[in-house]
Image (cartoon, rainbow, N blue to C red; front, side, top):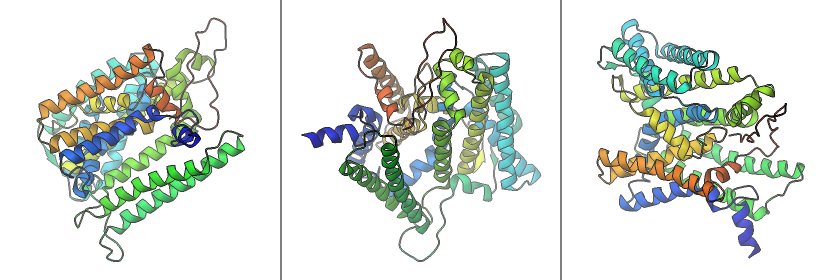
Length: 432
């Protein structure tokens, strides 16, 4: 009986963990298994898994930036239009001026940064609400896309397509699998083992409770099994395919931004501002700088997403980016972010994005029309947030709140406290 109790508390980390802490992960697994049955095994075959990562990587990239925007207490409605605008600019400079593809990528990043600086200026220094600024940006840059492209498609060169439609190349001996994908999976397995070992060492140094060794071993075995299964699927696709380059870009961004939000002062300042902006400012946080950064960062990630999509589509068009902001926002809220700001994680947003991606992909595989797909996705978003709100109103632990504890830093986060009398209580920021 004690082992079952240990398993419930510690399997996924933290002494207060339980099944509801990982509600979205379990939901994702349930959806995958459901569609695996309904599609007679198509959901988890190599071709579909590769296609899933390739098709939805740009939405997950947007979710990373949107998480930081929402945590800071804002919203960005312009990301789809910015992605489309950057896409047409990059396509045009390569087509009309014969600019090399790598220079075009730098130009796209610069354009995204300039747009982000423009919107960040209005939000941070003029004080216009981000909702209004980005709503204006949505119309402005959508019109800019159609003006520059003459409401027509613009093709991109073959070399540029690699970032959106490319795969890890075939190297080394013929093993029947893509060797680079196998090495990538091996690296992920090693990282999981090292992370678990370091987590146990850190908790011992802090004199905190350490999960029994068998719990750690079971946790590692489960994660390794998932990684090995996915690696063999991605590495065993048809000749010429493997793990998508866009997936590599996504993985690198997830690692970078997870580190920023969890292990840097700047990342903790974002959560402090979202938890209580006034108290954060009184505690020395530079409010304007934080707001400027999250808006500018969002536009840069939108530029990356737009270039990946254009590369995968082989052309930029006037309909690019439509509805992307809604998918990114849905991913963040399904992943457990708080509407009022201050709570949310990169990992949770990726899980939320995967839930929407698998749901969308599975419904298409079983032949559900696009109209009904949108209805179902809308209901999933509404129910996910409503269930969390209902739990709070009933005085029960919030699913998203419990989910966040898993990603808390093992070291205590310095709370942002009010420095004068009469300041309203602060939320404790939860780092991503």
